[in-house]
Length: 616
Image (cartoon, rainbow, N blue to C red; front, side):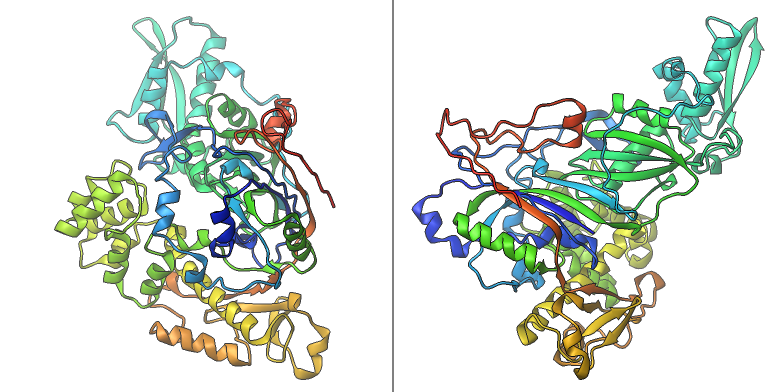
């Protein structure tokens, strides 16, 4: 179940703008909400506005990750995501539009309206809905009382130099087999705190006390080789406490995997001890549940003092991790700014959203933002055309990119030398950097192994993008051919199994029951013209719909089913006016925790705009 609150904002446009309204690409509400799959349902608030200034997003400090998953020396640098005009808008000039990925149909024939989605990342707020129907909120920073927890002094007893040496030892970055820490004020209590600090902050290390020349030292050493880093010590965790600490992660302008990498770096653990139910948008404020194996709430809460754009809270201990897909959906609060359309058009469109829903297209984020769509890479993988895969990822492309990526691509085009191109990348965790590292290691004649250097989820993203591209196009054809009604030969799910609708049963179903397959070896296709259209579209890409198994198992597609139309739940909206384009239009969980007052909208002092609020 997904709930969406949409806030849309309107300002006056020039006559030329009004004349060209029909030429403006419509911002589909389904673009973002469609991510969560066939069972998504939502609730919406809409707000309109009339200021005369350009809208700006406040710059926030961001954490720059290096290839190890940690921070660079300048850990906190200003992000240019919001401030650099070429970092987003210019990139899109050469990127895809909705027509390119099969998004061509609407559920209603009314005129509709357009607006700017995510002009500020704070205009898009996502709250995860758990399988029990509970919406995740960050509303409690307190740490569960636990007598087993060490003193708060463990966070301050070690010097920065001690921490650096211990981290290098923990990560096998030096040739030393131990690190000795002198106990300056030698008491049993002080030694105990240091023991606890090392073991808590540096999983995988053990400690012992030694006398050296009349002085006491705490000596840290590896407990069980490199495996200890990924598997925190079992004996140090109380049996009465659940093995997993569950917490709510509030993040701003950071995707879920980047957030996990940052947390794991600061905690000095491997990212794979974290689990979650779903990934969330980067350009947004998102709230979701995370679980981590044998890390105390106390340690996690301490990160709130040193991380920007993250907050952790609502801690609890449980005996289970989280699994992908174990959620009902997401609740969205969305602001649409610069609406082009009358109040009647806004109301008509929103009533349509509430009563009919939207076509469950895969949104633009699924296909990439640059001139080389991710589905093209996926198609090349399925065709087993590895030279094409390499070329699509590394070749120069039009549109704005980071300068170092442009130089890297130019070097590759000129020399085809992966090592030389890699030197142009200061941040090597990107897909280009990972592929170049693979090519340096395995050579240009073993692209399959080189491509395998890229994390599995990232590799699968490409073929999932191709599946999504096919699905979007087929759904558009299905709606064009048969409209918004169930017909014989359509597919519905019964107990998780897809079955065809027989002619005699057509009246038992509506368009909201119909599913369409993502191509694969374990799905069936509609028994009407669209089934043939699937075969034809894949055949045009030199793929056989009856043989979707790949030589490499990872790239074999089993397929899946996805509902054509989603009707969101609890849709509500309001139209508002405001004077200051820099202020947010609603309070986030963090704002509420910090006691910030609700935003002040139009005051009439500068632009004398009227404000109307509509709630349903």
